[in-house]
Length: 201
Image (cartoon, rainbow, N blue to C red; front, side, top):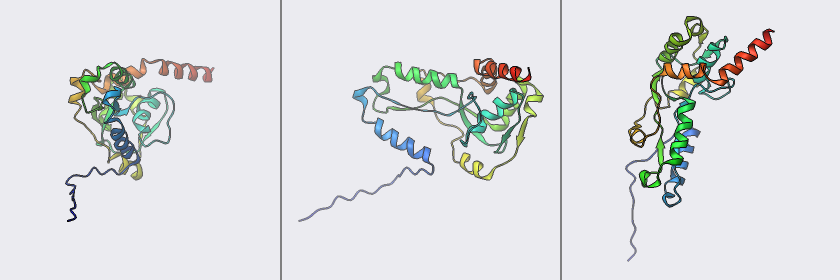
């Protein structure tokens, strides 16, 4: 007598972006590697990144801080109420180092970790810019909504439960003012300031 085993899926993980698909695939690849002591680290949106604006949908998250403090205008393509899950470059790098140094047994079978981020609206990011760098810097943000980018960013989580990462001792940012201040005090900012002075000279 022939028998069949029928499995009914009651929960399916559905992703709608390339980045989400990559996360799903990476989690699956990392999951069975406990004996190899590997781990997967998920990053919030990193800001403020050095360099220049690029074509990434998340580029504005750095651009609305980086360009204004460097005396340039920056276009923000999403609404002020848009909520984002962000992390500073320093905390991101610190998270990679901590993941490398973390004893494998503390991770257990779940090898993927979402790093702790800050949940802030874009309006709150602009307000932090004004507090740290002044009204003139904040005035250099041009609010021009781009429906394509807004639609994509609205699919991103504005907050995540990162309690596991915090319990494991991963570093995290205290507030967005500190992120803005850290960029202004960074070598990347000093380098751009020197370049501006050289152009003027």
